[in-house]
Length: 220
Image 1 (tube, rainbow, N blue to C red):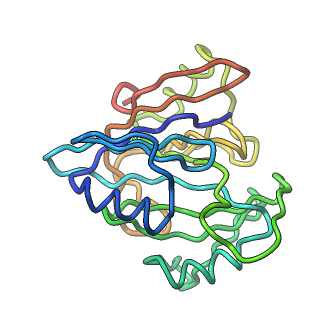
Image 2: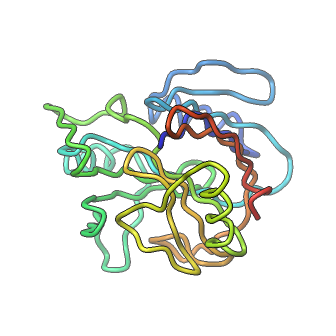
C-alpha cells in the first residue's frame, strides 16, 4: 500500500513551511495564503492552516534500509530527537525487521525515520532527507480499531500488516511501503507520554492500483 497524499492541519503555517522546506529540505509543490504542499519522497504532504488548537499527529518516513546510523548522525545535528523508554535514540522492532529514530517538528508532531530491512533499499554515502522514499505510516485515532479496520478490509480489500498482530488498542493495515495505524483514544504515541487524540487528516491511499480517499474523523 502507498500513502499517495496526506493532508494535515497546523496553526503555525509559516513555521511549518520553514521546518519542512529548510530542515527536511522538501520541495514546495504548491502554496497559497493558507496552505502549502511539499514532496516527501513519493508522498505529497499538505499543511492547511487553522486557527484552533491542533492535536498531535504521528507519521513516519521510510529511509533506505542501510541508512539508520547515518540518519542518526544527521538528525543529532538538525532535529529535536526523542528518546525511547530505555533512554536510547534508536528503537529496534524485531518483528517488523525495522529500526526507527523519533523526533518532533515545529508543531510538536511525532515524526519518525524508519529503516525497514525487507525493503532492501541500500544507498551509499552520508544521509540526507533527499533519501526519504515516502511517508510510510500515518496514525489515526478511532474508538474501535478492529471494527473500523474490518470495514475497510471489506470495502477496499485492505489487509492487516503481517508483522503486527491486531489488538483492541493498536493495529496496522498495509505493508512496509504504507501503513494506516489505528489506535484508541488516549493511548500514548510511542515513544512519548503524549496521549493520542483525534486529528483531522485527509489521505489518499493506493492499494492494488485502486485509489482510496479517507478522512480520519469519518473513521472515528
